[in-house]
Image (tube, rainbow, N blue to C red):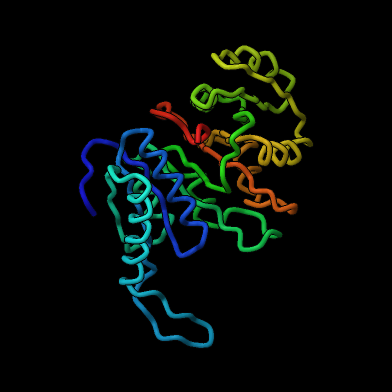
Length: 271
């Protein structure tokens, strides 16, 4: 693994799935916007084993290095001046990416939907959604060129709203702020909605959460939600697939841990 100094990189996790190339494209664009290096990480599962009726052959280290080389070549082709480092990690994907999140400005991963009927992002993205130390961008399809940035808010004070406002401002679009209606939280929610972009306030009941998240996921250009505390947003969002039953690609999701600074440079929503 190369040294990248004090500049916190954008980190993307790659595997052998077809959607990996799109995650690399998104991560490379984010790194260029921030003026930081791109780190491409692949987790090698371990020593090769002989095939059996119940166990497949694990890929050799050479295959992992080749995958990293292809990903780096793709990013370099699009952005020749981008500084790129790679790592073939001898640990699980979730553990390797979690380690990187402690010294990254943004972590980019793809969802894992083998079939349209399967819900969820897969174990790696789901684990990182609760434990990442930097913002996590989950790629579920190309970000629409139109539509608002949507933010799911809880009653806790976190950087989520400020980051969502920054994303909307850089994209030149409006912000849809969603909050679950409570007896005491409505006024506090209204007081928090001070932004330099047009804001649409949306108060919903708990029963409307799944429907609202579904509508936002295919109409917005980006969905932002806070993590690191108990709340409705993350649990509902990562339970959604990357493709709707009608074949629509769902927007990327940006998950924001507590106590992080706003993302520098332009955003995923501005792509």
